Amino acid sequence: MGERPVRAGATDPTTTIGVRSGPPVVDIAGRAGFDSFFEGSYRRLVAQIHAYLGDQAEAEDVVQEAFIRAWQRWPAVCRYDEPTSWVRRVAWNLATSRLRRVATAARIMRRQQPPATSPAPNPDHVALVAALRKLPDRQRRAVVLHYLADLPVLTVATELGVPKGTVMSWLHRGRAQLAVHLAESGPGTTRGQNSHDDLPRR
Image (tube, rainbow, N blue to C red; front, top):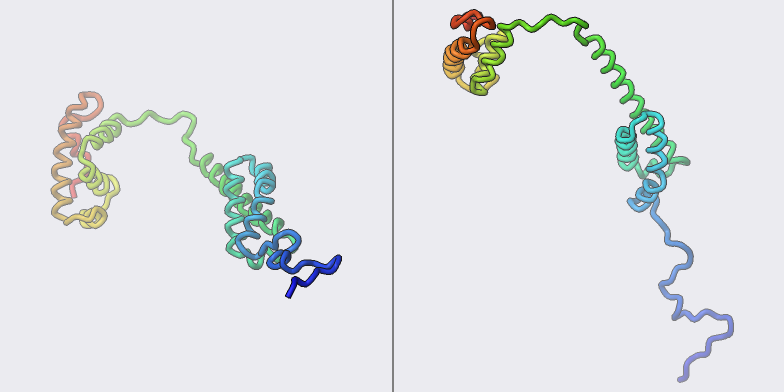
């Protein structure tokens, strides 16, 4: 049997099987749809938020956070009439919150600024701080917590995760070493070898 002729104007089925006409269909609710949305909106939104915040890095941070939130809700967000508006609103709210935090921090810093003429540091205090730096780390922490933070020995032991007897030993050795270091600091900054007596005995 010979091949059946194809009529003029007819489509040869062997050339159309598996072929779709037009551009590929993108699943807007899936990752490909989100990626396309991100690529088309990200730079524009960053530029807008940058103009508001005045800081490029901060603008990128808040816009990225807004897109993360959009991705977490993407099946719903992608069906909004203007998904970009939703992301921009989230980014705007985040930027406003950051500006408020910065303004609050600035007010606190202004209130906490030292007076224009600060008194000179007490020489004994300077000498004590310098002497404390010469103690071993955990021994120094024990001395500071007990004598300066006024914590009981048992509380210091709990803070440092050691037995009470260990803390008492550290305190005893710390006082002795402080006496030596303070004596070595020379006259005029301490009251001599007995300067460690300024620390309360408990």
